[in-house]
Image 1 (spheres, rainbow, N blue to C red):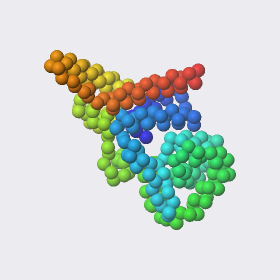
Image 2: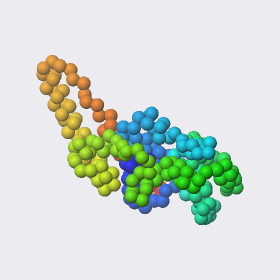
Image 3: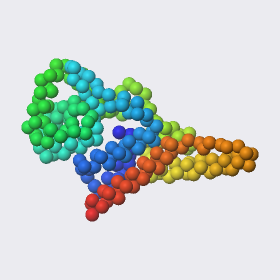
Length: 240
């Protein structure tokens, strides 16, 4: 999930005094897709991020919102305790990233059978299992750094903020509210639009046609903020 999405959802939950529900994941995934566009993530990159990791001939997929909500709901509903919670979550990572992957596991017995079957197939060391788990859930080490060796890619939005307003990636990612970022980007968009208009007018007087500058990423942010407001209204209405 994009950091922009995480910040937005955290603020939405606070603003609406709402607890997440399984039905909410569709809205959040739609919001995260818009965040991908803001971060300028290509379809190829998105497919790569969804690629499974293999252990003992078994494929483990990145944790999704749908699985996270399903897990939280079932742990509470079925009163799953202790190490069985870890076993259930680890098994969830083996389910493919399809809309119907969880449909056949609405019954506790079926889910527990599947989790036990997986445990019998895993003939590996604990550290191997831990490594795969961290890759799938995006866990961080004790220093707060990503478990992966890959360098952090902050994406287009953060690059834009750094270029226009300075600061550090950490400041924009972890300390600045989404609404503040949105206001700054709106100011940036307004300035760019004004520059484009001035450039077009000047070129028109000279008899030249000038193509407008690409602002797809900034338009994506506008769509993202509209979706945030849509979700806020929906969740507020649900809470009465």
